[in-house]
Length: 444
Image (cartoon, rainbow, N blue to C red; front, side):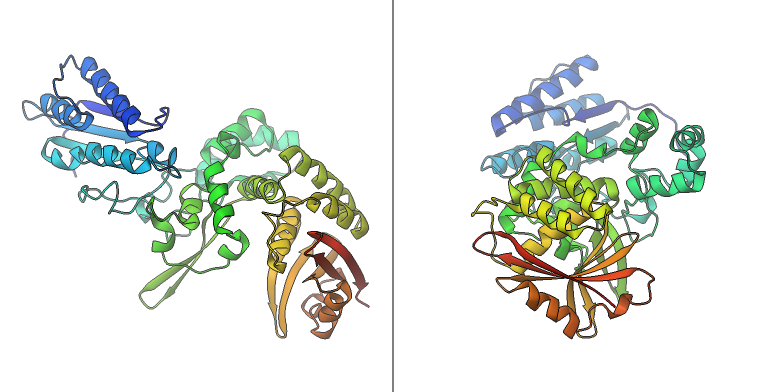
């Protein structure tokens, strides 16, 4: 389609750097933003409310057959900042009236573009905006917000070369490591994945691998919601869900899965089409997100500060690198000691989840709830030397757990891997809220 190359007045409304704790503050903020834009175009506004001023501004700019471009960045910031507070409903009311102008004045708007972290269903903030096209899962825009593999290698070749020399590895080895840390975001049914542009920029600036993206903010509200709903993220990652399960939500009925997806902690891992229905499985996009988010989850679950978590992980790494499970389980005992009674859930799965979190942070390859011909293994952990097959018992004995591994031949699938197979029975005590015994058996 040919473009007319005319110039249009642009109204850029950025809510990302603003704070409003109630509807009155938000209304005052929006009024000030309208006044600033009006002053830029030497226009005087007379209306009272923010949405009336927005409407007045657009109509005064749209003269002589000239339309207006509207750009609204982080439209959802006022909602997310108050999403677990009663005043969010009044904030929604203000935003709904303000954003409805985009529909009311459609005839005078050349182009409107709204961006945000989250997506609310159309019965809330966008109920009046049926003229918007949602790009969230649109395959045509799936690479718009990150770097593809080709873009990374083409546009950052010089930086990759510097990092290659610093790391002392081949280019392919380095690219594999970069991919593991920062790639993995997938925004549609298409299989194309993209790199986090913030993290890639920081990586090449500092020439150091680190968790950069997570430093931009700790998701306190999200963690609290997961805690309240007792959501097991390991279980969520195994479920196949339809797109409605993670694409939108209401402030009155907050669900964790859509928030995890929309805020980037989970992304599309697999798709499966059965007839006309497409289902999805979500997972962490990369090591950067998995390790950072898991560390925060573990800190909240055990009520221990992040520096204490990091110290325990160092001890665990020592034991695991030596294949010394005595050191590993003593460190785990120290980590789990003193779990708050209110946080404690008297289920094997609770402790199993903590265990999986810890081993993921160690960089070990870990699988939970592994199906076999005769049952389901609680966890399988692999490193360069050994494969550990683990069974957990809450108020059962470590010996009972070990016997179950043997009786059900849980080790059989790994017998021809060339690695040493170690069966591990673990007993958790509901009263002590900790690991109380572990037994180890090496497969002959």
